[in-house]
Image (cartoon, rainbow, N blue to C red):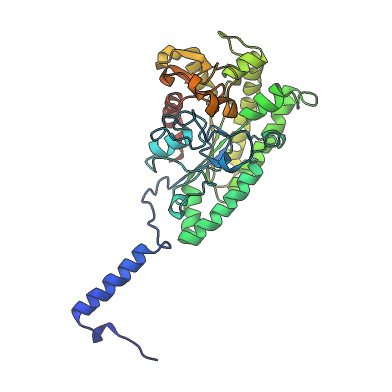
Length: 365
C-alpha cells in the first residue's frame, strides 16, 4: 500500500492540502459548531399552548393557530403556530438567557440539526396532565412529547456524542407548563371529569401525572427542571364568560381549583427536589404575577384585561380567531393583556417572563 507522508510535499502543496481539508470539514453538515454557553447550553420545553412554538401545525386538530391574526407582530406578520400576536414565553426565556432569539418547535419541518444543541419546544397547544385532555382536541399528549424527547436525545448523540449530550441534558433548563387545559376545559368547560372527581381529587390526578412525568425526565438525564403553576384561570376572558365570572370579576371556581392544584404541586416538587439525585426541581409561581397583571392592568401599561384583542374578545381562540374574522381584531394589542380569549399578548408575556427570570431562573445556575 502506498503511504503518503507530508514531508514528501512542498510547503505550498502542504498548505493547499490542509486548506482543502479544512474547507471540506467546514462545509460538511456533520460538523456543527458547539455553542459556547456552558452555564445553560439549552432550554427545553414541554407542555401546552403557552410554550408551543408550532408543534400543532402539522396536526388535523382545530387547536392550532398557523394563520392570521396570530403572529401579526412576529417577524413582519408571520403566523408560526405561536398562540399570541408575537413571541411566547419559550422565546423570551431563551432570549433572556442569551441562548438564541427564538425557541423552535421540535416538529417544525425546517428544523436544522444545529438547532437541537440549544434546545427546542415539544409543547402542544391544548394538552395537559390528564390523559383525557389531549384526546378531546386531538393534540400531542405529554407521553408522546416524552417519546419525541427520547428521539431528540438520540439525534443529539449522533451530532455531538454521548458525553456532550449528557452534559447538555444535565445543564439545560427544562420547563414543564401544563394543567390549564385540564382545569379550564376538561373539568369546567366540558364537565367531563366533574361526575367522577371533586376538585381536590382531580388535582390529585393531575399531580400524580405531573410527578411521574418529572421522574421520567430525570430518568432520561434532565437535572434542572422548572414546573409552572396553574394560572388564575378564572380570569381569562373565556372562563369569565362561560364559567361564571363577569367583566369586573374573575370566575371564582376555576381560580380556587388552580390554587388547590398549586398547593399540592408546590409540596410535591419540594419532595422531588429533595429526593431525586443531583436534581434541582423548582416550583414556578405564575398564578400571582398573572393575577396582579389582570387585576392591576394600568400598573403595567394596559387598558383592557377582561377581553381579548381578537373578535368579541370573550370566546374567540384558535380557529374561532381565524382568517375570515381577523379584520375584527383590535388595532392596538399593546393595550390588551390577552390577545384571544385565553392567551396573553406578547407584551404581557414579556412582563411575566421578566419577573420569572428575576425570581426563579437564575436559581438554576
